[in-house]
Length: 466
Image (cartoon, rainbow, N blue to C red; front, side):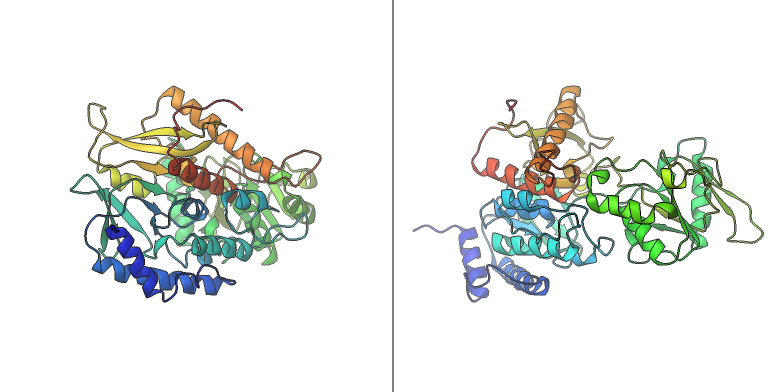
């Protein structure tokens, strides 16, 4: 029998783990982390001894999308991740979904425990389901944290971590690195107001009066009146956190995320805290300061008003008070591609092409190719595919035609609708609206369905409307 170098490497890992069948599941977050740490150590040891052909596929990112892909691909697939990643999500006390059973079952993943109807799924329940799925996949896991990808010397990819350790991958790379960094108010402001906003933001940072929404739940500002720029799920969590710390009024600038009002948990929040919330409809697009009596006491002015009129029904008769602390919860940067794509491009142009599921036209990935200056494709590197949240935006620098842009938008809408349909929580509606494009359900769908179609070698360039 002929055995490939990768098969020998996998056998070595299996022997290093002492028992191939005894580590296929775990019952606690710490237990899963321990198993994954052992698997990663065994993979590192085997990698130092390996010679011959490189692996033919890798997944970068061990979020839901990456785990769903690994679950539906052969166990020889390499997965780069970080076993402690999930526990650093301190800003996520619970997800806004009240069920993810349909999505996780469809992807072949363990289902998170569902709470009482109408309540949010606890963060730890989702984390445990994800880690159990990664353990069960049997994937060749390396816990190297952040990595970059660059073109290799032999028409392959080179993946390098922060310690300089590298590995060659001969085939495609699946990128499941999630959302990018948070947007700042300065990036929302257009000329000629950008300089004033940048100056105001810097002064607020120096005075300790500004922080990002990512840290709001873990380290909520203590103040009488708190302003929040943004009105998505993270902002809603921040509202609860700052009120718990004693805020008497929370001024929120933004348009409420379209999916949130369909969540029973969100409606409970609005009902409970409605008289303490002052909603200002519309995005924040300017930021400035009015001088105060002393340093650090300047009045925060958003959209030209220091004390705008509240627009939500419960507070419509009130005006916003003087904001003491400001929180940026403006979403994620979508003007740039994921860092992995940028390094892989090596200064070449980047082309995005939607990958649609043949029988549904749902978006299941974005194909990334690289172009020469004359716009012809570079042929010195394997394909790259984005899945999950990384596949939900088109950066400004990407090349994409009008037809593909339309197919991308339509396909993402179909994917989101299908995910909501398989996670039905409202029998009268026949579907739910809890799952946004950048949520766990969509990531699970993309990862699993793309992996299945790739494994089956099915054509993905054409689709037929269901």
